[in-house]
Amino acid sequence: MQYPATYRFRTLMMRMAAVLGMVMLAGCDKVAFEQAGGDPVEWDSLRGDWVLVNYWAEWCKPCLEEIPELNQLDDRDRITVLGVNFDGIQGQELIDLGDTMGIDFVMLTDDPGTEFGWKTPVALPATFVIDPDGELRETRFGPQTEEELRALMGG
Image (cartoon, rainbow, N blue to C red; front, side, top):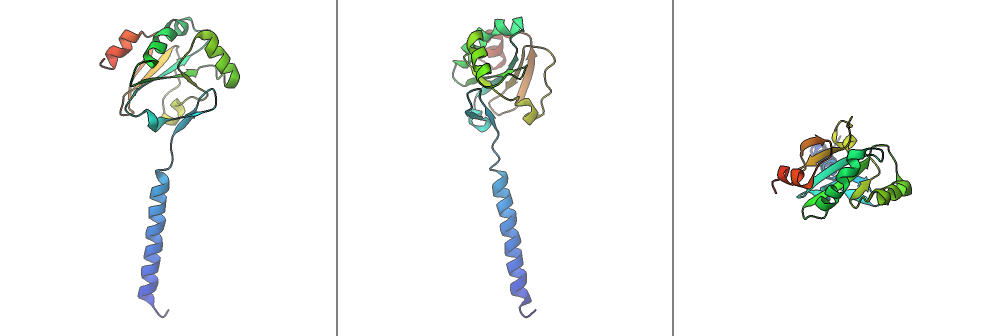
């Protein structure tokens, strides 16, 4: 090899470029969840808001009781409610069921818990409360009221 210093420099620069490329691509992985209508909900777009991920089912009477409370919370500034159907209903069937049950908040087609390592709830309704920094603050079981959840969120 005639120019070893040039070869080493070029090799070093190529390695640095590869590492920089990997670091930049790692930041491109955005977490998004599909809504019942097909549009995505980007998790990062919810930063700064309280997020309530509510697991519900049509056959769950306490779930029906808390829907109006969750609708009211979802109408407030800096609070987003996301619903997850426990029975895995998706697409137009989920949209129709949500309309029948009076759900006004966003319904997701997939469980976001798998992305974040949350355990699937064993009782319904279940509400995962995520703070504005994106941290799981608390998991609550049973029907929740607007007043109880607002107290938890400091408002």
